[in-house]
Length: 311
Image (cartoon, rainbow, N blue to C red; front, side, top):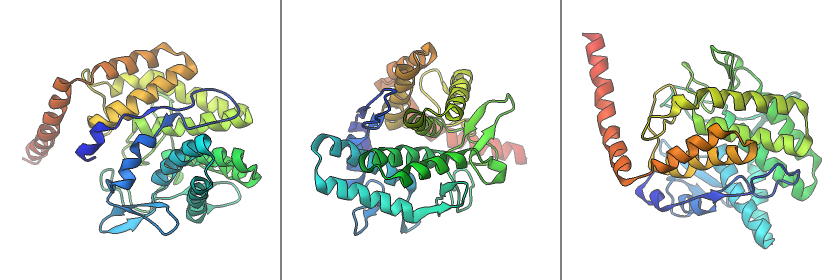
């Protein structure tokens, strides 16, 4: 993420269990600069849907489309501007075009390789599935188009396809349920992607009250309570469990901290409060500079370990 992102502070959106969803849990509108200033090296297509730059070409990325949709939806709730709604429907139309659907489920694939976790295209993402559920349900509550609710259900059903079968669900060695943003081998266990996936389940449960969805929510919350300590570097937070990569400043401030604060407000589980307060307190100039230093040192340490292993 470019230096400009450090100036952005995202706020909380509508954090409740109400059946009427309202704005998304995190108000992402301050991050609109990522699109308007081309931080993603992308562009908007002719209908105003964002695309990202990947390997010298432009691609539609479901997560980006959904998050841009959350921004538009939050704006529309405030101003009811027809042009804003038109842009929101354009995002929905593109997601419909990107959707791969069977009688049982619906999935939105990423059509480019992920080099970081060595995943070949096309690959599914639980984060994309969860955010699609959240966006489709919000547009469903605007339009009352029942096909959107049906698609949200199908997106949820795909989330329960195991990674080994081409899906995104994984049970760890302790029997804990994970939804993988990156269904890699070995497991990646990316924290923010898992929580965004969980937000999608929250929304589906809020709208439908389905007990099966509630059971999965409870299992995910248990996973987090048992594993949050593994994402704690003491002075900062880790992005994932596979690489133990320290998050960027932007993620620490605008993703991990607000996500855990939302989980605390919704569940009143003290462990979420403890970690969001700790990670928020960790956001100091000294820690920021130390993280920047570690980003320079860690690759050299990894290369040294590889050299020692070979020799």
